[in-house]
Every structure is written in C-alpha cells, then in structure tokens.
Length: 127
Picture 1 (cartoon, rainbow, N blue to C red):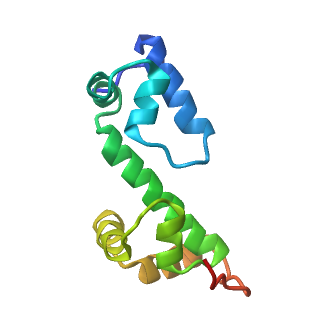
Picture 2 (cartoon, rainbow, N blue to C red):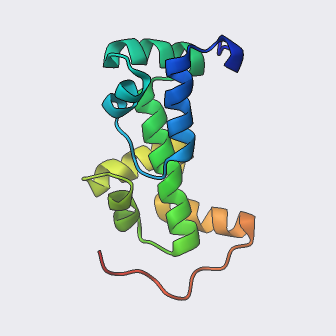
C-alpha cells in the first residue's frame, strides 16, 4: 500500500519531485542518483511507495506522453515513439496496445473524439 507523503524518505521525495517537474525522459539510474541511492535501493523504495516498479512507471509515462503527442500535435506513431525514447516502432506499438487496449491510430482517434480535439491541419512528417 502506498505511503503518505509525510512517510516518504527525503531522497524519495526529491526523485518524485524531479519526475513531476521534468519534461525529459529519465532513466531509473538517473532517478536513483537524484535520490542518492543505488538503483536497487531506489527500486525497492519506489515500489513500496507507488506499488509499481520504476521501469514500469517510466514506460507508462512515455506511452502517455506519446499518446498526447499524437493527439495534440498530429505526430505519427513512429515519430511519437522516437520522441519519447523508443528505438523500435514495433515494440512501441505492442506496449501501447497492451496499455491502452487499441492500436496507436485507434486510440488517437478515440481520444480526439472524447476530448473534442480536431486533427491538426499540419502533420509533422520529418524527423
């Protein structure tokens, strides 16, 4: 069960603050370093607080970011995947479908309808 913020050790609070404020895609090692912990100690503390592993959290965060890039900026899945740190478009598509239950194209259309967002008129085609 996640702890309350008052129960968190200061290093974990520092790492959580970095996660909330940063726009870049971080690695678990960078977060552990920010918290002043080894990667294994950070993993153990992070999971105790969030009930998920740091790797799973970062992957979910990247997929959500990619979904918003596709919805709001009109990026194709492959370019959105690259922007959030995926090297393989097929791996991105598999993980995207596993998390959201539909392909990137289907999910982008669904979210646009739900939010009332029109498809951007200028599509980014270059890398």
